[in-house]
Image (cartoon, rainbow, N blue to C red):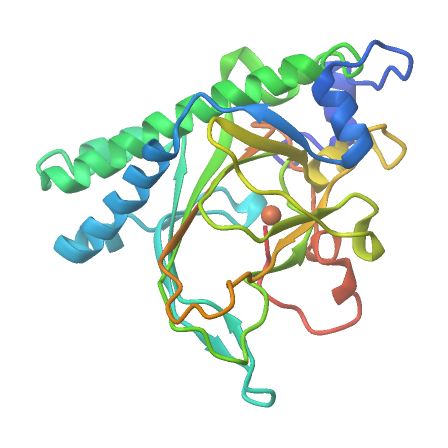
Length: 305
Ligand SMILES: [Fe+2]
């Protein structure tokens, strides 16, 4: 017996359902119309940049400590917490760059106590970086709660699914891509995919390129830039596993294009911050072919989220 509820058990335990004739909030109307909704963001771009720069400073001043943060987190989502460095990947046959060099960092609820203790005697830059991550994660969980509250009239008890007894289970992803000199053979920044998550808060991106296609793999791609004090929310495959493919809210097919203005000789570092919100007590059993359906029958790639 798994310690987690399956989607059908979760529907029974929490009394989950979709009420098709309930009044719709603005967020829900946008999710139905476009698969994605703009939401109010209490944090500023300075808050996110400070977090990103904090990681860069730690990488410079205490890389060993930063590396010590890495550990395997919850296995349901292929989860990792802490710092990861990814170098550039180039396809040997085509010469195409398939992955940009980047640093990323995952915060989870369970890492707060762990890292506060682990780095209590550590350098101030490290402690400051971690604390700003915790603060941002807490603030974004607050944003996610607002979104869920807005969906409750048509999806009763959704709050209990994601925030039972005020608990939460989320991954805050900080992505910081290296700056680079552009050249010809460069693919997209992030390949198209569905998220594993229940709910995604696309909190911040300081460069254009994020796109979403409401109608899925073959759908028309629309770009969405982040504006100050605004963010986006959309759903992942976890939502579909729990609420079913007939629900009025569907997971969103999305990716990040590379957009380089003509004549630019150097593309500076760029930062994105995303919160993935999941149900603490449920295992959605999302498979790789759920999030990357075009891979069905072909070789497995890294599990994108
Ligand atoms: Fe994603």
